Length: 228
Image 1 (tube, one colour):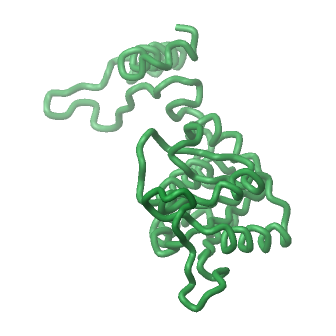
Image 2 (cartoon, rainbow, N blue to C red; image 1 turned 180 degrees about the vertical axis):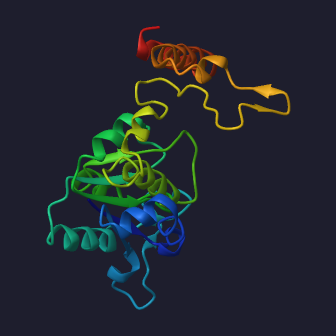
């Protein structure tokens, strides 16, 4: 997979993509992540990418020309399965969408900034808009990191045990059950006996019941999605 990220602040994306699972996935050739500075497509000597909005509203808007030229140049080099725009007024990104995007080959992510991007980019070039929550951030760089991380860990070869991602929270619209490791007793706190029994059927039943209980208790809004 290849992921191209368009931003006015490429420095914000350096560290997240050079550590842990994403770093290893890049080194193994599982994913290629390229960060593009939109300012490189600006026409003036100051590399200006923002301007005042029509209508007199406060704040600045990402100009259409640099963003358009950047996207068009990249599109001329390859076909993109999705051109994603990160914005707080978009549909919420979730595990189902991450699973879907992990099956793509080429993805472009445009990071919103200031008050957002000129609406004509959203109408004519963007194929999908995503938000990471009902709040406003300084820019779309952090959402781009979250979306990329969620996608990359699902790609075959990214994790040491590929089946690990299948048991993550939200894969079945449920939260994951509690997990424990050695020692079985610490400071008087013990691991549930069923996990030490070696009875895989009983363990699976316990995990399913715990996942249901935790989802009802912690994320009741998910109940309707799992038929509880």
